[in-house]
Length: 475
Image (cartoon, rainbow, N blue to C red):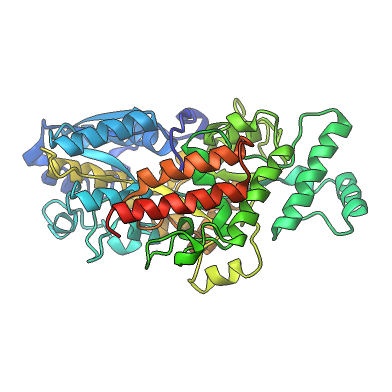
């Protein structure tokens, strides 16, 4: 999960992207006719302050208003405020918002409460669904917004991986390559396992000290904040072979003696590694959330790490914020033995497939008008420019767009990675009790990261409390 990313949208003129002219809108007459009954209606929405959300606010919404006459009030704010306002509206049924941001990992809680409108009947209504909507063109990420019967409750607008990113200029430097091989006896290259990653982390941290420069071989989002729990659950543990937060989804228990893996030897080994590795990150790593990990990499201080790759847009193109333009490489994260093979066989996954969608609250007052706007943001003809603005892809056809193919090398081959290997990553497991679980994980993970208890003791306590929560909830 990535929350609270308060980044500025790259200036549209810098990227060469302005408003979308009506001539570029497929079937503008259809949009005007479909919107006619709702002309003058004001729809209200809320989302997190992320590059994709800002692209919708600053580019998509104004053009939608011009073409349809439907007014859009789109609030973009911090994750905490967005979440709290959305939940209050959903719980009360006040109908303040006509569309809301639905992050992938929270959808199961919303479905459990019946808080979202089933969009399948809307999709089947030709009067309000654009002929070129093409549901089959969406990537597999849309499956995370369906219920058990296959009904769709939100339409993705952002989707990205959290994966391995590294400094190509450092890895390809002949002097550095020679020094690394002399020390470790093998060639410096993108690590495929955690032992190699550890060697590289040590090497570059020591290299930075020797050269008297700020350079570190590792980075983490280790603040006492939900981010550190998410990093373990959704990035580190899966790459070590611990899936679904260590919870057995059949028994709904986390302890080894009850079918789970949360306090298994492998989970403890991975967590101990995570805590130990903080010594190779910048001194302030225990104050880092997802924001700071990207910022410190952009400042040129990190040789490698796992980062939410929605940040690639500005890291690769914005000279006012990034010191690593043209120096970025992207690859799959390192994995423990057998993990990659399990992912390829569909029996596991190697990392987190993050993102969000727009859904319509059950109590919304302008559902049809909101549905038109949600479709507008998902139009095929805008997706390549949308991806350039915000490093996100939710439609298969977007990968073949010339604009994306031109941009791909500047992004370290990220779009190719997403297209060809995105299926190896996964969203959060279907756990309706997601939020209370995160609070329990945060408590015990933070204690170990702070050095208050050992990682092993933390996981024994954590697994026990997860089992207790499941029992209290009736599982």
